[in-house]
Length: 180
Image 1 (cartoon, one colour):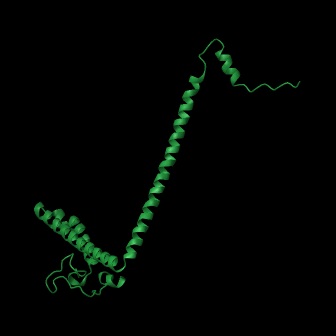
Image 2: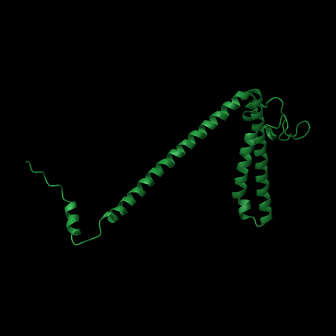
Image 3: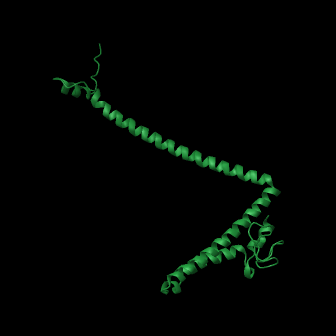
């Protein structure tokens, strides 16, 4: 698999692909042998990076800052963004094709990846459940504490003439027992 992707990341062109504008005109994403190389011998990754930088350069360029024709500025920026999106689609197509090749050549690898992703998702969700349970226990304890505080005054008998003495005697320690 790494040998099939080497043309995209190195200066060598992988077999079965043609430069843009080669035989039959520009290659299009979605067709076998879609362009992994672009004009000037750059790879798709290089072209993607260059078009991304061009998007920012067009936004901060002095020509655009000092320019008075807003329509010209808008057109230039739109062209840069469109080029970036086109190269991004080509790059995505390249990786989708490689993924398809992998799924045909080694279907067990795709199943292993799916199982791994599901395990990771399950672990993440279990951690989330534990986090929510700890918050739930915390708030249950807070509610219990609040309800205990509110119950204490209502549990006392209605105040009578001896209520003060009853409260005071309840807070005293028990009297020691006398030996017989």
